[in-house]
Image 1: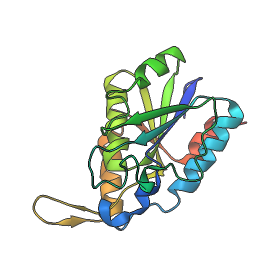
Image 2 (image 1 turned 90 degrees about the horizontal axis):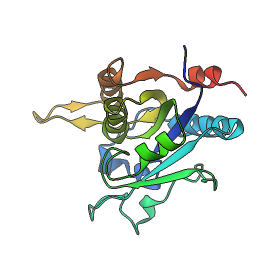
Image 3 (image 1 turned 180 degrees about the vertical axis):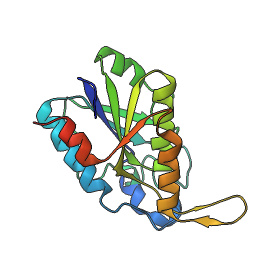
Image 4 (image 1 turned 135 degrees about the vertical axis):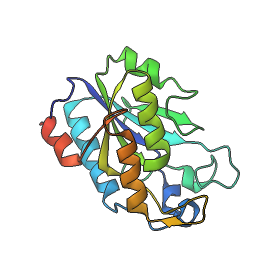
Length: 189
């Protein structure tokens, strides 16, 4: 696995509102996502690589990620450091109506290592946007997670199926997909 010399780690929507599983569809897959994100955060901080924290500030009055509601708060393990970049968004992609692209250009980032929630929503949208903008994107399969989804025909799809299909949508065309362990091995301390 060959990765770039100056990668940025992006942590998308790691907020307390994600724990309100009923809102998202229930039956979240990948219970170790937070642990793996935390491992990557630790690695990036030790290597002094750029870290970007994305906070979704929903405009929906019923969203658990709306400003002013406890669910909007970042998960406890995130604990932003002063040198890290905070992106607040109200859309699915971290690139829409934010300065993320300009930040990546200014830092001459070679690629974006993508973690967070929800795989088939903001993670996939951000990875697609990165690919469209010519930014090499890597989605960390076990540092992302999603929930059950009901299709338009009423059929319910389990979260792991939704997760795998979302990763398959991205792999090759918009992003590479690797595990936390592969990423950590690619950037040793």
